[in-house]
Amino acid sequence: MIYYYNYARTALKIGLIYLNIKPNDTILIPEYICEAFIQPINDLGIKIKYFQLDNELNPIWKNIIDLTDSNVKCIVMLNYFGIKQNSFDFKKYCKSYNIYLIEDNAHTYFCNTLNGDIGNIGDISIFSPRKLLGLKYGGVLKINNKNKSKLEILDVSNSNVK
Image (tube, rainbow, N blue to C red; front, side):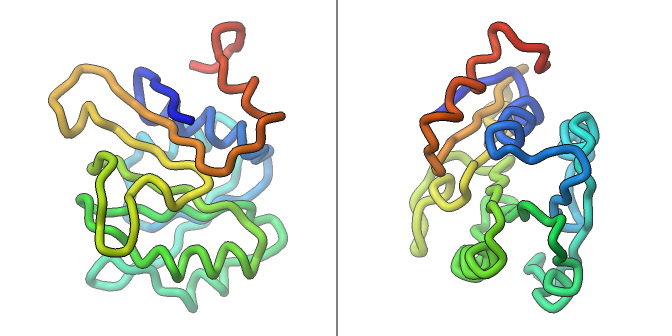
């Protein structure tokens, strides 16, 4: 399922609600990230832990493991500049700790790679086509973890989500 919004930060906010991430839950985020990504997380009262990256923008897994506790509910895999991260490692980590994977593709749009399709890996995937196409508006939420009982929250016509 694909949903379109004015901004990717709105798509992220709806995605976090869809995944049932609650206030005081924790999300793991790479240390290099756009401040607009942080806004909806703060709006929802979700705690943030930043994980370290090496010089090639790959996660330092020992640091991630050290940050992981029972409050961690999801991790962000950011495909920097459209270059796909090692999704196998992220999926293995998420399965081991029973947490959600959020795929951030702010500088990418749906495309094929040697290791799979960008946008089909995370439980949810976020895109910001306005950054690529020179549009004034444009954010996309792609649901890959389909729980039909939760899909009604994605209709924000009667909600306070902005």
